[in-house]
Image (tube, rainbow, N blue to C red; front, side):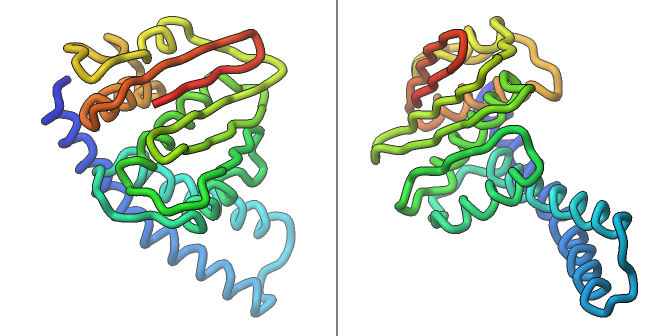
Length: 203
C-alpha cells in the first residue's frame, strides 16, 4: 500500500464518519428530549443512552484517526472531550497532556497510536499522551499487557523506509499499518520501547 492508497483510505474514512455522525447526533438529541419530558425512564433508557453516547464518541475519534490529514487546528478542549466521552465505562483511560492547539495531521498520529495501545491492554490501563512541540511521546502502562510481537516489532520505521508497517493485518489491526504510513508521509520516525508492564512510542 503506497501513499495514494493511504490517502484514498483516509478520504473513505472521512466520508463514512461524516455520514454517520449526523444521525447518531440526532438520536442523542432525541434521547435527551425523552429524558427531559419524563416520557421514558428506567435502565433500558440508560443502556440506550450510554450505547449511543459511546458510538458518537468513537465516530468522532475515528473521524480524526482514519480521516484525512490536514493543517486544520484542533483545540485541547475538543481532544479531551472526545477522549473523555470515549473513556466512559472503558477499561483504558487516556491522559491527554498537550495544552496547545495541534493540527489534525499531528493529532491523527496520536489517535492511531492510541488504537495500537488499546490492542495491548485488554485488561485495562492508562495511556499518557504528551507532545514537546516537535513530536509525540505516548506511554501505555498496565499490570498485564498482551502484545502482538509481529505488529509492534514492525512499527519502528523511518521516513525513507520503502515498506513501513507490518505486511499483513486484520481489520481490527489496521491502525498498525496506517500509523507508519502516516508517519512516513509526514517525514517522521517511529520508535518503540517495551517492558513487561509498559510500552513507550515516540513519533
